[in-house]
Image (cartoon, helix red, strand yellow):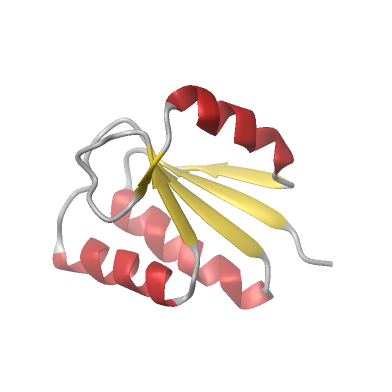
Length: 90
């Protein structure tokens, strides 16, 4: 049975994005939420974000500075979180 997993990205950006990609190997639905600040722009994080998009994963943010991600206000993110089977915070 497919699980719904939310990954909350706060501090360890590259590690959180890498781990999010690894979770799809189990054929689970994984959504990524980049919270509170602009994603650290490194070659590695840019590659992870591009791969997330290629794999048709959803990536959301509550920080308007994060280009290429769907903006959601905090209250909308909070409303969505209870629908997940697992929530992983990084």
